[in-house]
Length: 583
Image (cartoon, rainbow, N blue to C red; front, side, top):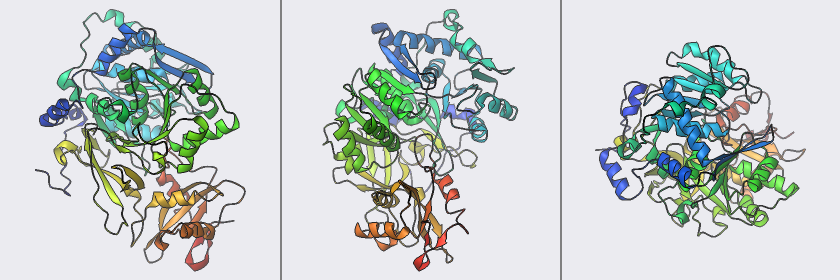
């Protein structure tokens, strides 16, 4: 029996023991009975589409620097998935081995994700922005047997970094490098994986995963680490299937057969992978992406690929709309924009609807749970102004009130998309298995308010819990500060006074030549009816932008180092003991 509030964590001996992690049989049986899990693989979908619609586009990928768009059709994708899988097998990769790949949004990253499934390996997709220190940590945590990197990317020597850390990674048997400069001792990815027809020599009948194999770990993801620490998260085919809404009706999940999905998010992250790799194959549709963010290029890609929907962080959507205002383009196929990851401002919802003629749908999800909440398709166009979505089918929620939180609630979820295990590498703690340790419930760490329609409105991250005497809804305070015309971006971190009491420091990126003063921002908050306890007592101007992760989320660990930790002697003492960074 699970005792609420007691963190009972299962121990798994060694990383190889991860392959033994399973959901309880009764949970799997119940989810299959409800239609939330299934007994056929995404690979069965891939094979079916390749046979029935071999020339239909499976992937449209644009290289921004080279200005080239590549179309991978279903027959081609199946061929490359089989080829990559046979290449892995020829290198001695066995079932349950971890295969890491740190690639930009190239079609090869999608093919490698599916190839790992074909070979029975655990895919470990990694963000291209990781540098040597973080790369070493995650490869060590995964104990990856193989890692694929480009020779260089965005001015960074990826292959050289991997070569330097490899001697400290005893499990790493192979380094594969994609590009013109392949160092000695590394596998030439283009030659060995792309151009060598391994699949022609693999004469054994294909054995695609079915039934209970779909409840085994197949992907190991690492969270983006917005607060400075990454988490390792294990998913199965069935949790991914539910996590992208494969089990749900169209009105709830927002996509139908033949859908054309586009995202600027990295497809080596959970959101991008579910949305632009997994869901398109389930739908027999198309995944569309570009390898570097360019608002102008992305608008052109939306039109060229006849995209029907796009998922992006609000920051990307704001930049996209700024480019659209500068030079409007017709997007006749687009039917919705979906935003998640950070709160969506009402002004953005209204602008997308007014200018593009399509609704903006909000969604909420996390690496551990998949997409948990989404604006339903039959909701009014302005629903995202007030709500971050309703629970997806199969998602249960608990909203325990926060004492002294002025209506705030902790968000707890469980459901068919919940990870089967996660842990903090290097922490010394075991793998936490939600279905074994807490009846499937996941403490999301988010503080929310009920939206009055069965959904939620995000208020703050629990790990950003601020305030000595009052729980401060940080995201709500940030939203109100953003209403000031002189503020382009704003984020709040905590700081302590001489008595140890915690107060708010607001970091501001000004929209013009003058940053608003602390007094001006306090006035706006007061006029909006905010409590005195919610007013910031320190302001720091930063620029040209707030530090962010590869998913467009604010990196609060870096922001705090830039502001509060470096504040001594660099900010003026303001009135009433506050600090005012206005210049």
